[in-house]
Length: 135
Image (cartoon, rainbow, N blue to C red; front, side, top):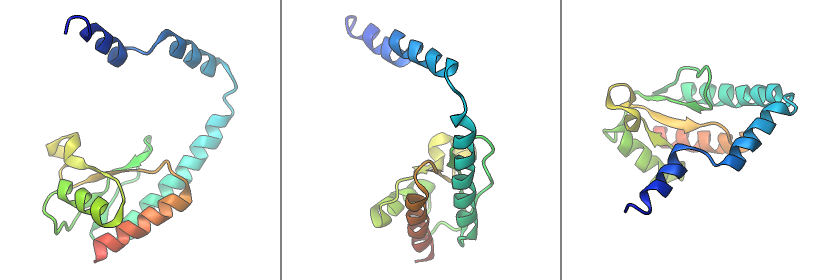
């Protein structure tokens, strides 16, 4: 235990020196890709939020600075948000995270959905979620 605990702590607490140098160089290099990336993520965000808010039983505010949505499950026939995401994965193959995993007080009754994938993938996922909540 004494031998391996410091190794584990180094891995989880700090990045390695080569990664730190790489991060520094990425900050010194060209930054023009950032505005393109942010613009693309806004398209993804707007697409996902629009689709979620059109679905019966779901509502979702627009995230201001993240790459995931946190929709509220208005009418959950499965009982808990954890059961909702489990059944969504089992029945439709769409992986999300139950909101209560981020804290019972604010997360219960929600799920988290990452909108980084390509718009075609997101469209397919939104179609499957819509099928799931309307079945």
